[in-house]
Length: 195
Length: 195
DNA sequence: GAGTGATATGAACGCGCGTTCAGTTCAAGG
DNA sequence: CCTTGAACTGAACGCGCGTTCATATCACTC
Image (cartoon, rainbow over the protein chains, first blue to last red):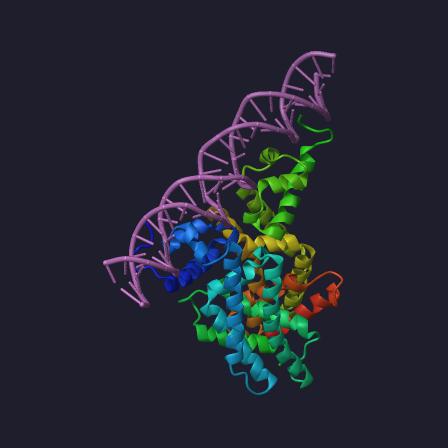
């Protein structure tokens, strides 16, 4: 038997990515087999290869699309006014976006070493673009004399690490509401750069 | 043939752990085979089982010993005086210790999901103890009125994430010297909590 | 210098891996 | 209603995996 009733390529493709994302996030790329992904989708392993050339491309596509959506969302976010307000808005955006997509975030920065060199370079380029957006804010703040940081690159990396870390401990329905968490992180970020 | 001249258990044991640590850090636990580890040591795969009951225990032992050494080193570190000085000393210690052992650190927090439940619980207990040490400093600072943080637990996680992030970008011989990096991180940590 | 225990080999075990492919089923267009 | 092609199956491929074990070698003790 083959081709069960109701199957469609437009449905199976996204479902494969969703299942792969969930499994990669939970167990890690190397520990997840194509057969496990297929089982999660409700399909045989061979069928996956109608939608991805190989396992590596499946991972890369997840990471690439995540980072491109992140950059697009940042571009769509209003970052108005003086550097301090822009930094606060960036911090809130970053925390919110990452809390909304824990799986994507987790995969995108835990599985870097499982990318082949070419794919790694492409992903790093996107990550760098995002980091640069933050660094621009910091540079503007330093130039305006409202931030005091000895090194904007170091401060950029420190802030991103701090903000991204929220995904490691936050759990829905915990002690703190999302809005509180966003606000607290934003304030810590501002203070950290001396605003 | 077997037992080549000059072999000793006291040498092979540590060498296995060193090779495993290096390979796990570079490629990830799930992507490293026992045969690769054995090859790095210069031994056949079977010989590894004279030193570890299985692959899982090898990983756990690396993580456990790392965290216990971290806690011991923290306990041996003088954290004198008022909260602000203690926080600065903690931040410098954390950055220094992590920069000195990039492989241990990387393995200890990238491979958590590859621990079985029992081992995971043990490692989490140790991590928690370390986090608590920082939170105690923050609580003391809040009580003394010198730190302003809405939630000490959140601030603890944010600071540790920020400080640990140094391992993700710092490279020996880069733009900044180690001492500078330590100092900058310590100052950012202080400012972040409003000291 | 014989005997013993620690240290290692190398072959083997069953198993699951990523990937391929010939064949099968079904939805839709003319 | 027939044809066509997209969607999928199920079996197979060679390979490397973690682990075990009978066997071999060597360092050391008495």
